[in-house]
Length: 334
Image (cartoon, rainbow, N blue to C red; front, side, top):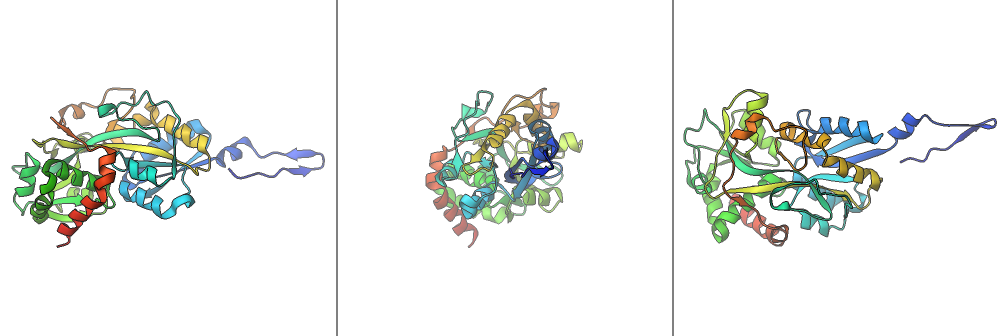
């Protein structure tokens, strides 16, 4: 908050209006592009929070979740944000090791995510399972397992995301590793023939899919709900995989050098209330991690429900992420 000097006219002090002082209180949040898009939850969240906080909320967006961590590593203590929203549990150990985050110190009993994951620094705000989403007008027999995807018709292409910049891209890498283990390198070599492009983030890959450039894309089991609700079509569906689906839990945290730490904590408290969580299912198209004011739309009842949830611990990911990404890069760059 900027310091406002008092200007004395005669013997009376001139005071700035309360509205001006409120506008000087600003929270900057780093997040990813699809969150801040006009069709994403960003505009809804901004309006709802500003109506309560007597402040301004400003978004600064990068392509995807891993890119958030990369930006923080570049900026270090010079980062201008108070909150970072859009990392996931696969990145929290690396994020803590930067020394840039501080414990949130808020009550998170309202949070409800698979496995009851909790942390003293990061707070979940949504979750979802990764899935291969396909165009039913282009794919007659979608894969029913990761094995079928890997070994399937190379003429039926898929768009995926880069694990070096994208949390969905990292999610696919971990999904492959959790199913194939030490044989993941060979599996990537087989899948490579089906990959049309490796996009830097989810938005780019999904845009290619909806533009008809590719019949399959790595996304989420919840993605078809968007098309059913917003476009009134069931053309796009998620394939259920026999081996299970990898889980993503998205989180937010407070930077140690936040310009207004209490305002940042107020945002995290707000994040797990109905006013924020109501925006998640039908604008971020994920599952809410906190209470909502009404039942999810009927379209969610027909979505793929994974028979098994796959998830490495944050510590396992931190220990192996760089080596596993290097394996992937070696195969994909051949």
